[in-house]
Image (cartoon, rainbow, N blue to C red; front, side, top):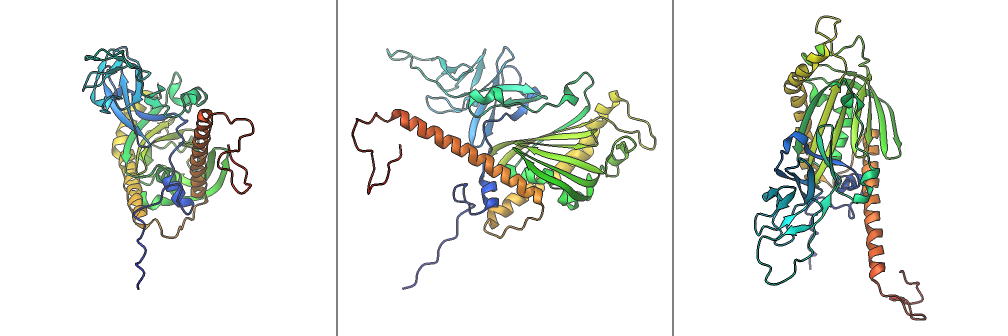
Length: 393
């Protein structure tokens, strides 16, 4: 009798069944106990509600008529319709089906129908801390008690009286968030950008993990390209190296103290990530001269540079990570070949932080179970104790 051949796995494993680091990194979520950007502040007007997602959770973000932003679990507790399809009513959000109205904390404050002689039920959904900074809306999807202890990164160059010129870009890519962190910090992919040449001839000179951060430096040439390269102020800025860091869950870079960027990722689900880039510049030169571009002109110049070079460059990265996602889904059992030691450190940090989160969740669940368990009578045997093995409470 022939034994039927084992069926190949239907798709990449989840975190608990992953067999090696790459599989674990590609299945890991991101720790919800951090602030994550979900939208531009300017994109949500008074009286408007939008939907976003964090690791499979749908969240409704709305701006009341008082101008204050609020964020709620995106479901009505009655029939589970998405509240993002409802209406903003003053400072509240109303489901479009039966008119259940929620305040910013997620409590139902009004029922737009007969209650059949019943008292108003105490109904509540989850509310999330929400704030704005650097022109972005941020939510805290984890334990709200920890929100005050987590800081959104400071960017003093943008907050001061003379803010630097900046370029904003955002994309929603069908790729796991770890692939994007690998991409933006792994400068061995210069070939992909051979048309725009933002960097080339990169050599990794420093790489270390420090707490919840990975720091690295490349000796490289920064700021090529036929157009944008002519504006790089090489007289005043050292463009022969770049410092990068993955300060979990945020990524950043610094070239010569004058060309910087942050990359903020929003892990929407296992294969979808929204990415917010903020580039900012202190010094540009007038092409063919040693004169600096006047600061009032840097903003319009950066806007043009974003459209002509930065966004097309980033689209190349997007195409690459989306292709990597498709390739991983088809070849997740293939041997791992990764040469850059920095990528190994990124993945180590991603795996560790997700495991830490899962451990906290498990411990919290065990504490809840222990609180619900009836007290043991004196002298009663421990439950499930067999063969002399000690029972676990």
